[in-house]
Image (cartoon, rainbow, N blue to C red; front, side):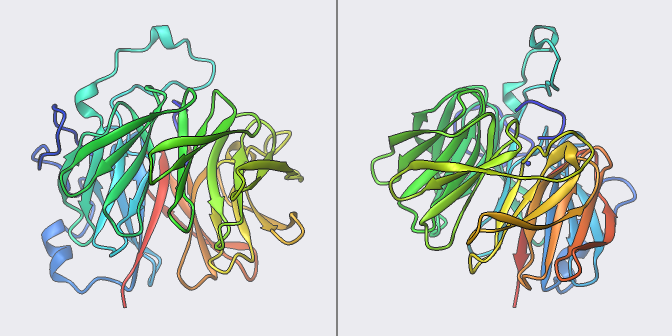
Length: 365
């Protein structure tokens, strides 16, 4: 969705190149420490990386001390973010398409800057942009294969998914989806990738061996993000306009039922956006945009077991390796909430850049 808060500098061309402006990967003014200094210091055990859509940068947080390390320039409209399996790199979706908040006539918007489209590969320790990979128009979200060889990218304006060979930085193939594809998630076994289509109200299941759509799954209104249970048996898909999740049989690629979210918030009903799943499958965590809350859903009963008021329009969400702490990116308030799951409370908020969007976590032993 081309909204101002949807859960790297790009070079022109159709191939991956190492590039960036002189400011790429450098801290924003008054942010500390500098990238070179950061590299010289032993990294924290756990770091949280937050993309800031409007300011075009990346806020890095030391999760050990719950303090910001700094904010570093990336490129236009950084949104979706994933860490490589080895934790050494980050991949960030960058877009030259102008934001189009709800109610805005897209005909009045300036033309997109396609030279700014790409997937930024960021060094997770120095926060420098190593290269920008051309991966189709207007990338929004992405996922990476378990072996770190392939990227799967949703191209929102192009109504397609691009599959990228990371070694060469080239697009292997593209797969047609419905309009406004957004969420991208590989099933845990890596055999299928799901891509949501906001406008089409469906999920496209793509076989990763053939790169063909094996099923179009009608889901509901404006499907956003996808979370699989660890055994790959079921998927939960956030449905922004239904105030619910779609429960999907992820083996048969069948819609099972709607799982409504209920409660009182800042809007008449929840607007499910981001999703995270506990590694043992015992809990599903859902942010709800302008509703302002994080929901905790028990997948055994498909009932909410609690909610937490986290901030203004939470979108991106990530569970730390301790499985006790969650971070949410809160767009309009330009901050990140740290949630203690035992007490179901926000223990701290950390300032980020302008319109924080996506979150990734890297842990080091």
